[in-house]
View 1 (cartoon, rainbow, N blue to C red):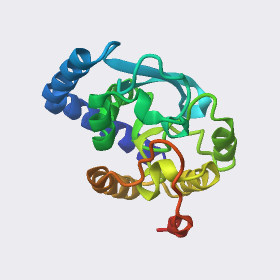
View 2 (tube, rainbow, N blue to C red):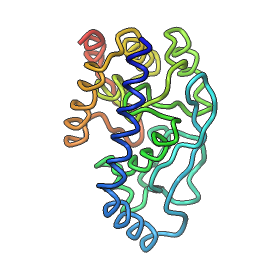
View 3 (cartoon, rainbow, N blue to C red):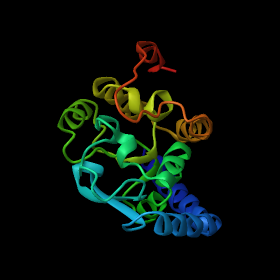
Length: 208
């Protein structure tokens, strides 16, 4: 287990560093597009829970107006489209808004693969994750739950997926999650902006 943790930390840092070097032109283009198309900062910071439920600020490219209700998951807003900017719609659809989390990985606050960091006030999700020890490891840029449903999963099922990852985490599983994430992002599957869309057949994927 110690060897896995060491290997994972090394891979996280190296991949994040390479990502920053390779993707900086995309960072620059997105930053200019955000700054010239809407009022507000380029980056969006939000309080999330990290390893052992320690708080940290997750970084994203800003995709919403500055008057958007704070600390509320977008899919729970009554009319998300009202708050999402034009460039924000593209960034969210392509998941490019998540790129600044490479910085969180370099700082050691996140991993590439792990449970997605919960909002500090998502008490139900946090409580469910406690049952599986999912709050005791670093959160990830992507995770087992994200490749099996993303936004449409209810918290109880999302926590079960996170628990499966905690129980079975390995380099092989991390690679599997990473590769499947690329496919999910390319098809925009599981993204819900307003309301919930949940297919109970996803429960059958817990042991896939």
